[in-house]
Amino acid sequence: MAFYKSKKFKYIKNLLIGIGASIVMLGALGKINAYPWGSMAITAGLTTEAIIFFILGILPPEETYYWEKLYPGLNDYHAQISPLTAGPGQGLDPNFVQNSLQEMLKELQTMSRSLASLKALQEVDFSKTKDHLKAVDDFYAKVVETMQVISETAEDTKQYREALSALNRNLAALNSVYGNVLSAFRSGLANV
Image 1 (spheres, rainbow, N blue to C red):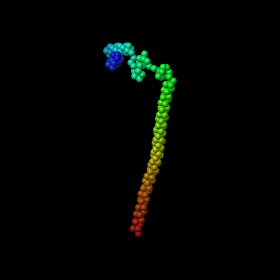
Image 2 (cartoon, rainbow, N blue to C red):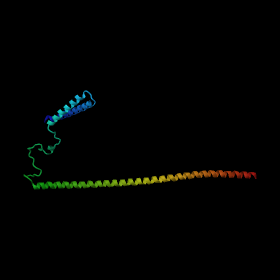
Image 3 (cartoon, helix red, strand yellow):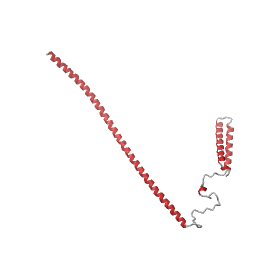
Image 4 (tube, one colour):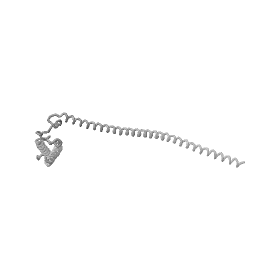
């Protein structure tokens, strides 16, 4: 294995890129604030980054896929890999292709049934959600209706209280008049 593919090299490479970038940022900060070390720091950081990018340009690109694990011989140009359509004999075998297509069709039919089942489950779930939303909406309508009845009842209660207050005032006035009549009647009997 080449050194540039090792974990140690990748770690050092990432470390140098990070250090170079941080020096560039500090240098830019120094230049913006006109510090005397700003020019030197930005020059050092940009030089470090230039060297790193030069090295990265020389190195071959890193493979980020692993198809060769699934298809052995894929990374070897001279490997003898028979085509998918090739059956036991040389060239195109119609029976092999037909059998492969039939197997693929069976898999697609199974997947289609699975998707239909999932769709049915989804519709059931959404229909229940629709029922729940309707029940909540009905409940809310009843709460609004109840609040209106309570509001009307409060108005009736207010009128009832006002009527009772008026009745109490009238009874007090009537008691006063009755008391005066009784007093006059008693004093008239006493004089006789």
